[in-house]
Image 1 (cartoon, rainbow, N blue to C red):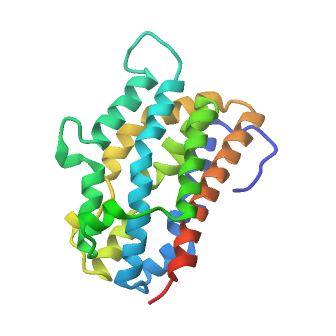
Image 2 (cartoon, rainbow, N blue to C red):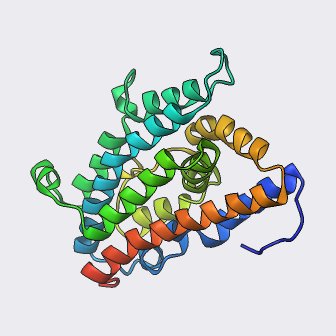
Length: 241
């Protein structure tokens, strides 16, 4: 991300952050996903990813619990961040509709690449995956809520709202023979509804040059953690068949 020495308008700063995700997010630009897009990974290497992503998904509900706990106390209304995060968790965990449970949807992918429930439940995270999860947890729990939302609800969820995960979907279908119902990525429409309010709050916070620079730094921290996650898989299991 280019460093600017002036405060940007709300619209320009929002566009800059979205463009930073498009241009630099490791979920798209790390060497491991690039091998995926090129069809160069083996089934065993897809399984290695599935084991580690399983452990990421086990940890993600805590991020939204932490963000909701850190949100301001207000008279509950449609702009209450706590309600927004509760709705996000309700959808992601399939509380009212188990067919939308993100964890179970992901398991379809894991089964499609040849893993069993028993193998997944007996699996262990790599040290790099532990570091990744603990790092994201720190951002969600210990940073000011505006910065935590910038990391979790924008730098991460932006992958979906900007439609960038379509490259994963296309590669998994084209190169690895998966059906759409075996792919674990939620729709852009669903995630856009989840992140609308957190994005607005981040932009409300980032009204000065200093605060905008801080949000850029949080984006970089989030990207760095994804590098740790993919580096662990890349180094332990190789990158090409």
